Length: 348
Image (cartoon, rainbow, N blue to C red; front, side):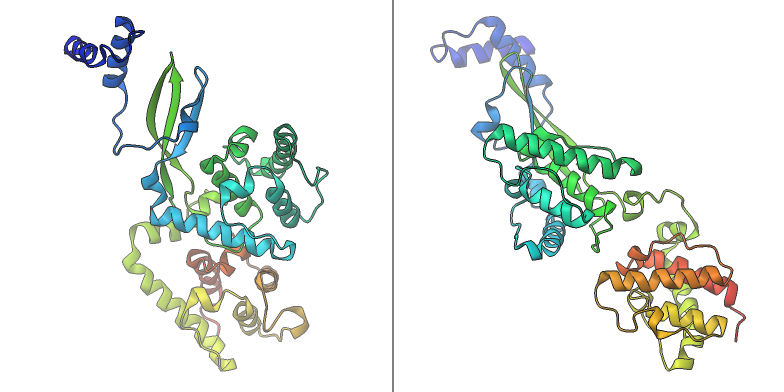
């Protein structure tokens, strides 16, 4: 069959390219048969075909860019970045164009880490841009190394406006600095890999995972009963929630307070603090927490303070992060309330 294909290909190109040899045509035929089948034709920009021998370039399949979860990931990250940089009067609209030279990335890292980077403020030449970018990426790696993040970007991919690499970088920063956002989980994209080999462009498709679950990305690898409940018995979840709502309302009703939504009404930490006072039968001084918290940090303060009260009451420090409860993570909220339920369920 391969001989037939090669012979047909020879006839098609006679007169069109006299410089093509029989071996060249046979190689093209072999590549055509062996190359992975693309699910849809890919429009490759001219600049993406200007590769050196054995050079490789990647790009996102246009169909993946239209995926709703991918669009949500990009939007959530852009909104978060713009909120962080609002005082700098920086507005990010396009991740590839706004992050490749290191200018915005520098400002973002300085705000997140509350530090000043020793890099040039303005760089014009490509060499200077890449040197600055490399210095910033080195600083980022110092922050991420203790958490064991896989570094899936480098100076060439970021400076080359590789959106996949930029997204990997921003997701890592968002997770490390505990951004008050909820990233869509299990976001995957089809990536087209273009490589020049023996003068011929070859393409292949690979699946790139941009996010997993919030727990895995935060490094929580220890599963518990709530993981099993969510994964395998979602029908019993409503029963657990109803039991916990009944438990907390039995005590909060003493202050004329009532809970109907666990994840949202505990997100600012106020009810958790008041509940601990009721369960342990003491008054919590109002100067120790924010009764009407404003902003993410004040809510985190409240929940962290409630965790201290729990430890004072003899409970272990909750495994849930205060930031996750603020971010309306139901599983984290249930873990904390269930621990209270198991100890205080008989308290009147």
